[in-house]
Structure formats: structure tokens, C-alpha cells
View 1 (cartoon, helix red, strand yellow):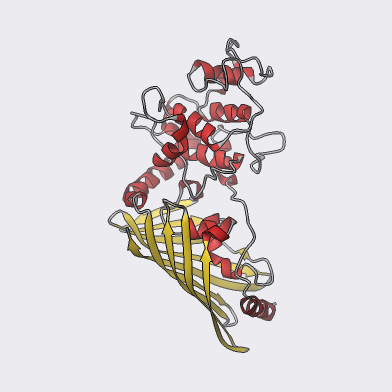
View 2 (cartoon, rainbow, N blue to C red):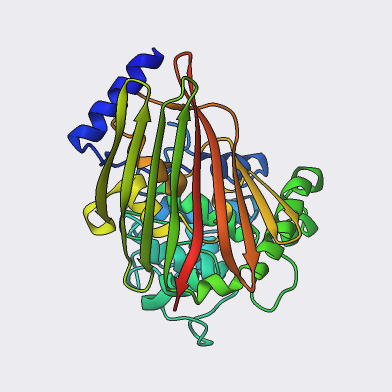
Length: 385
């Protein structure tokens, strides 16, 4: 088995197999957390995260997130929308009474219309007490404002193909945010109002408190729209085979572009060391590889965090399952002749200085059958504008 992995790696490198297939992000952990807090139920098919939500579903998700379902179900329907089924009416009535929706026209809500990232952002922003009427945001700019306040992390929320998965991640993130002109987080408010059990919320409140310190420490990354990172990946197999990449990744977050240029080297006992250059462009990649090029270096989104610890300038994150923007960093293993599995918890250590991530190291153990690989992905901020 070990020799087969080495042979496959050699073949993949020599053949230039340096691309991977697209893979959708998965924020099931966010849905699990919301359900544990009594704020998410899913559908008869389970969470159903791999499809777009309808406007009716978005209304239900929002009201459950606010802990207002019981109050909504007690309302008499008086809203002007005539296109609702009876089960939808209480939820839309609540939104209408509380100024969270005006429908798609004077008499239509369009419950079966797919909910876009823009629509859900507007719902969420209004729920956090931001108002179009008061000039906090404009509906057309709802996504940009959601990104500005940390509700939508570009590394997490796909604003083009918005799924229930993205809605779950955004909803979970919203719990950590402070509504407009309020010092407490949304989760703190829900606990104070009795909508969420205090004991169930305690772990998340502690996590959010530490993450808020991290967001403050890395606040400069928001302004860092153009930068380059030097680093690469080292993968060691337990029989001595090593695969390394060394590259410089140039990122322009304003334009959503990123490129990487470097070399890949393979060493094994059965062959002379082999090196080949490579060039990668995020515009030509998809799925996890594109996410890694654009977002593999930077502040860690809350939706990805399993655990976070802090000691001096070092912040340590652990992941039971690698998020897309980190999994894609190991692209050189993608066509290596078999499926590699994560063995144990992965660890990301970031050094944060002067408001920015100055360096990071991701360590993960991989396995295929009885063969083990030790993989490390490093990056160091090289230039910034």
C-alpha cells in the first residue's frame, strides 16, 4: 500500500496532474450548533443544506434564529400577501409586523421564489436592527454591508450560488455579532430573553468572546486587499517519500483574483529527485483549490472554527474536518491515486502582529489504508498594499 501511494504520486507529478475537481463547502457543524441551541430544525429530508432556500424557508430560518417561532405561530394573519399557504402565513406575518419584509409587491411575497444571498442578507441585517430607512444600508448593497460587519465572510458564503448551507453559516455567525447600538451579542440577547437555554449557550458564548478578541487582533486584514504570501506544502510519507511545493501566491481581494507560481519537488528512494514548475490561476480553478488561493491565508472565518486558543501573538485553531480553503491547499495530492482521509484533528497556528496575520502553519495527518502521511502547509506575509 505504501509503495502504491509513492508510485501514484510519482505518476501524477510526471503527468502534470495538478488540478482537482470542484467540491462544495459544507457547514453542517454550523447547522448542528444552531439545532443544539434550538434555533434550527431543517426539513423532512434533514438539514437539506445542498440546495437553495426558498423565500418561505428563509423566513422560517430567520424567525427560528431569533427565537420567535412560538410568538409567530400565535399571530393572526392580516398581512396583504395573497400567495401564501396557511403554514407560511404566521412566519410572514411576523416578518411583516416587525418590518423585516415588504414582500415582492403590495400583494405578493413569492414564497417559492429562491432566496438569494442579497435577500437573506437584507433579512438578517434588519433582524440585527440595521435599517434602509435610517441609511444603514441599501438593499442593492446588502451583501457588501453584510461582509463589512462580518455577517458574510467571502471565504464562507457563496453569494453567487447561495445554498441553505450558506444560510446556516451566516445564521451561526450572526449569533456572535452585536445588533446595532447594542453591546451584547445576538446570542446573549436570546439567552437574556429566555429563547435559548443558558447552559446550552455557555460554550458558544465563550467561543464567541475569544473570537471577538481574534477579530480585533486581525482587524488590519480587512484593509489588506492586495498582498503576496511565500510558503508551500511539505508532505512526508512514513517510508521516506517527500513531496514539497514552494511558491509565491499573489492575492487581490478587491478584484477576486489570485495566482501562484512555484515549483513542486518529489523525492523517493526509488527515483532521482524530480522538480517541475507550476503556475496556478484562481480564475481557472474551482472548488477547494480556488478557495485556497483566494482565502487560504488570512483571518479564519468563525463558521470554520472548532476551537480557538490564544497565547501571546499566536492563535491556534483546530478543525475536525478541514474547511475548503485549507483542504484545497493540498492540491498536489489531489490526483495521487486514491482518496486520502484526515486522521485526527488538524491544527492551524497563526502569528498575528500589528493587526495582520504575519505567518501561519497548518498541520494535518493523512491516511490511506494503513499508510500515513504528515502534511504541513506554511505561509508568510511577503508584501502588502
